[in-house]
Length: 94
Image (cartoon, rainbow, N blue to C red; front, side, top):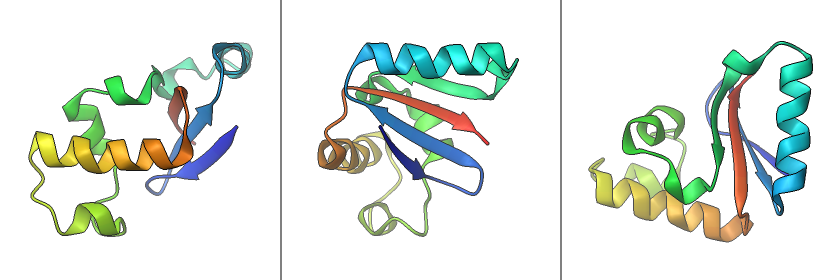
């Protein structure tokens, strides 16, 4: 499990298998914090609207020079996901 801070209070957790992801989601359910979960599942399936909200615009070198249209944003996020080699992710608010 790898944890990245995307924005001030938005965390990206990557998981190699679905079991680890489910355990983390169960922790959120036990703590009554399910409203903090923004996305769970395959990181490449995040919709454009959420992707635009969670990615830092100024701090990410790959994104800063690109136009923020859907295709370029997905390419930059795809490169990020490929670097960490995760099949599953959980994006949530702190």
